[in-house]
Image (tube, rainbow, N blue to C red; front, side, top):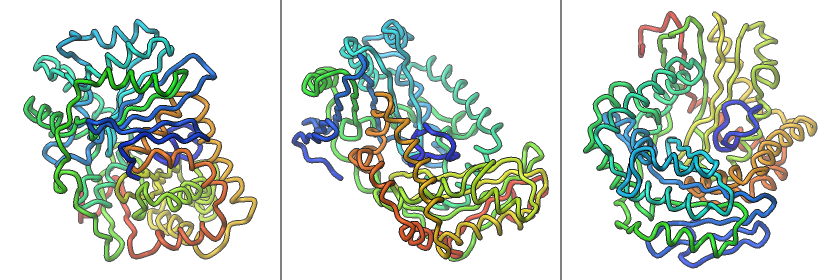
Length: 448
């Protein structure tokens, strides 16, 4: 996923407006965007450099739609979508796509569920038919649910054994007290074990609606032809009406009155310190782009301002990860440092000093230019493939508006030193800081 959308470390190059009902074409990018009569959004981008077509289906049905007792229902539903339909028996959809020389994949995040494949363009009608049937006619057979429940529980176990991922998940519990962004998209072992078939089908019928869905096609296909194929494949997808405000908008997370610190127990002997602030949603696009550039300035384990600051203080560390997930609702910007016993207070102080220094001391032209080149390089890397283009368009449409994907590179290139300072001053203040400390000797207060 793109760095501006979900950056674990800036060195990872790839990872990852209301539109009127009538069609809109963006000539400079060769993109057609339209909303079908049933409410489903369709985005098509012609890319004739290679005989391939990427199909991405995005549903606004992630863990943000869950409650703690139903945490993981979105993820388990995602696993069930391709198990069986009235038309395709168990395993047949996967075999159908594999027979085209392709793979079928899916994923669940906090804001969305994503299903995707890339096929030779002449096979686009077959792929669309299979994907549409799965989205519209998933069966939720009891035996499939139990099988996939075990798969999901294995995924949760692996996530719990990933110390950095666990650290960021625990940090989310500190940063979000009322907003469901506190919930991990995988779910917890307890909640997933308790989910019933009725829980899954209720979630499916509530959120898998055409007006909650976006289909993106990028590749060697004419826009009008692709649009007709989507209309035909999804002809049975009937609108169910817009959700109520209470269903669609989660409670707003209030800013903390002071720094919030929580301590958790380490599972591997290492100490992890995660420090972060509230950050803007995707709709505040300019600020989000500036924060992506700041990620590059802060750096990773081997280079950047955080590593330099820790080295200058003589603090030992084994890894540094930065995280900013631009999402539909206000989110967080954070830094995670792993150590074998370094001074946690010194680590917190170093991180806060570097974040706040960005608002007080202007970056040099060379440092800003280098950071922007790194961020733009990630964007260009993603644009090299039809699947990357489809992913960017669909993801942005799901969290804000697809056209932001088309503006990203230019926006990053135009960011100034003054803008970096302004954004840092806006978000990195002492009053709204969150700290999660994961160690073998946690504080007696707020232990986990």
